[in-house]
Length: 539
Image (cartoon, rainbow, N blue to C red; front, side, top):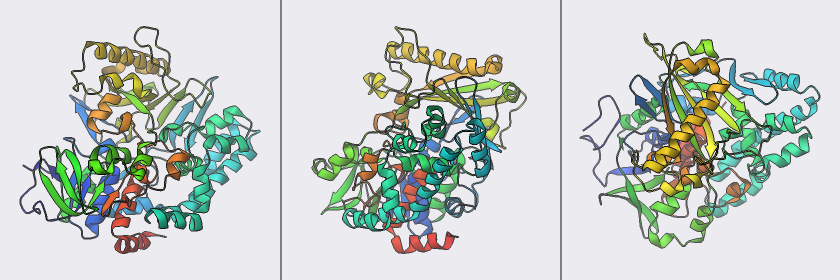
């Protein structure tokens, strides 16, 4: 039965193709899968999207509690206006229905030890000026950093084009046409910052947004750090109506062109016959055939869970399996009653750093709850209700907030395989201790909100695993290290004929990174028509 006014359902509606009538099957409805599906639909394909969760959207979906609703992964998105190709393409893929609202002149605010407060604005010149005001002796280093950012941004077009080729020809294309980008991907952020400045505090500020890609400077590829900086040069945006509009509009495009999205459709295996992907088998035994398959479930999930057994020992599979995932996270979901603006909340995201050590990457909770819980090195705080112009606070003046920090996956792995919301008393004790500690840490930073807290709920990496199934609960997929980008097999066209991969793992990180992974997958599957579409949108 079709969900009213939504382009997805558990069963196919009448008039859609049978089990052998699809052009493309897309596994996973995260940003990469939805973008790929919508783009192929726009190019004339009949696309079936399969989503194992009961809500599509991946990390763009929302969930509700009485009186409140929260996004789970969309806090600020750059490059969504007609100033950028990605913005124009996203408008095309959604028929202009998906609208965005700026977070304002400042999209991120940072508080560092010692009372330093910095604002990251929606203007490149003001960004430089803010940095130079905070570090008057660092102007030369700041300019050098911004020049490196521009260099990387300018090299990305050729890099993305080269990634569309198969492994061998793609490596040659990258060597010939994308050498500057390859060099940036092969260098760590820490190495570049060390060349630029000896000021440890300036280095920390320059890479303060590393949580947007999930890898500290000693491990992250500088290209990713540069792309995050470039991504927000003209500010951050939020979808009007909430992040759930992203799935609603992209998947509506799929439906409008003869495709559909099935929820609660859990794929057990990709079907491969005579070396070519021909469809999928669901966990209930149902088989669905198509001319090609696109996996947007994540590269490691694809090779570890979805390929036939005879492929598990292949060298290219092992090379992807050996890549490390980005860190896991916990998120504190808060419901407030009252005017949270008066207490210092706003559309801009708040970053509270408790250390100048930019390598402090996770909250050390190894001995919780037996010992005193230490503070997290950084808290990332977002107030979604203040970002969405359509939010109605009602007579109770209800608003929402989120507090995010990274945690070690291994501390939660012992409960892997237990049932959601029924993981046992020891897990509840552990989770309650984390929730209480994180709430208190947040309220110490923003004490004016203490009396307004009405609802508190903590999600852990086990929640992420249950609903999205990334490797080791990672919010960003594979960690964006030089080793990841040196892997010759991690590209949208897999070594298996007619099997493609979409999402952030084959491009870059974040919402727009995952979108570009979807664009690359669609372009690799239908290169002539896709490139014609992209050329028509270039300026």
